[in-house]
Length: 130
Ligand SMILES: [Zn+2]
Image (cartoon, rainbow, N blue to C red; front, side):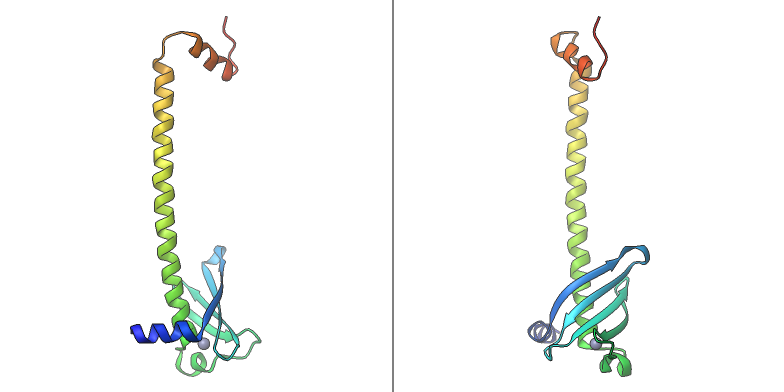
């Protein structure tokens, strides 16, 4: 399995990932060793087609429903999804920290006695002090 993956990496280059958000379809554009560009179409990591960019069918996909392009696209898609999940988890952690900081700030202002700082706060909010 490791050998197969390494061979794929040497022979082919994934060029682009195009996601069509509305229906969850993802197209991976892959350049093969013979300098043809293949479009692998998938939905939720399930490959539905592979064809050359010039419209010619991919022989492997046409006759066996499996080809190196589809395999590589699936591997890349899984890696992409993993990375995206990690990024989302990190973003959520950062957001949670921001909310905690904000809440602490609001609490400090709320608890502050009526002094100049508090007056400034009311002016900031557009409520004039009388
Ligand atoms: Zn193919």
